[in-house]
Image (cartoon, rainbow, N blue to C red; front, side, top):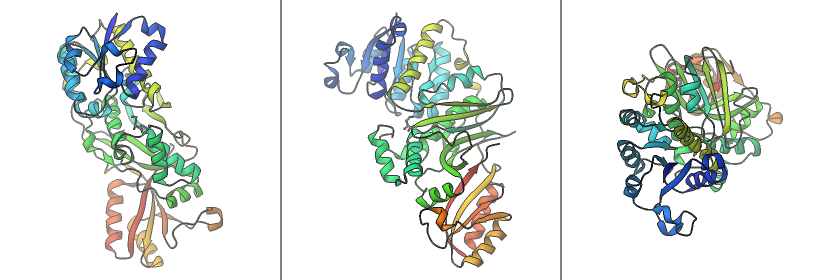
Length: 420
Ligand code: HSE
């Protein structure tokens, strides 16, 4: 029997408990020994009442083999996970904040102690992505990752696109459905997706991608005009986490993208996540599934637990080697290229259009047919799609345009994701 100490018994923790009792083959080998909660009173009448504690020492001092951390956040999860590893216990965690920030240090401790630290549930909820990246695709040179890795923002954008809802209304619905983080800023401002991108990119490119170095733009700036125009032009809008390997650097960004409806990620709706991985041998692989929620996440957590149960003797595994030697990635988006959709409020329309051409070069102006557009957009704005240009060139062109005095402001800039 393998004994589990569960840290946290909220949505995910109770999902893990229920799944163990539902899945008889797992239950035969796994015993929940202790459950750490904040408020013991709340759980006293549960079938696990006798196993509940509010003291972390009870977990460490019991005969627990695997500590399962599903409490989230950094404090006290970091301390608990570190102490568990130092005491020679395997750890399974669903905590992307923890792994994005302290993954390298914790993996080193795990390796030194000959135990395993698994975190499949930290990215993509129920989608198996960490193990495929680190093991099944290990023969590849991974060159790119494109992902919808935040269910909340995908839900909000889907509601805005499909039903014409406003941002605030869609966010409230996402919160009511339990998708959003306690503080929705982590979701809507792109930080949650950036942490997940840091985890995936570090594994894929064998370099430590620091979350702080990722270029992040959230979805608060996406307006009804952007949605209307995207529809009019045959695009949808998604918050994507994208990274790409260059010779000397890694490009990593989390930003809204316009995608043609034929793009493989365009039809990924609501709380679903999807990740495309490009490998030199395998080509493109698409992973798709529920990126959040009680049972999808519990599925990934318990999958890791079962992996340890089955492979607990061998510690010479991909998740246990070389984290010490993982060099820091040089993360830089300046050389990355794409087309940009730009909306501009001009001072004088024709003068501003001339200035746009002089700043951005070859570009396509959009003059939407008001009848086909369906819903009114702000009068007088200039809508333009640039040719492919580098991020740095875009920034310089925008600065020049603003300095020209011919525009009031840039209303929005959205990158266009090509399906190539
Ligand atoms: N808030 C996260 C999301 C939960 O919306 O994707 C899963 O990590």
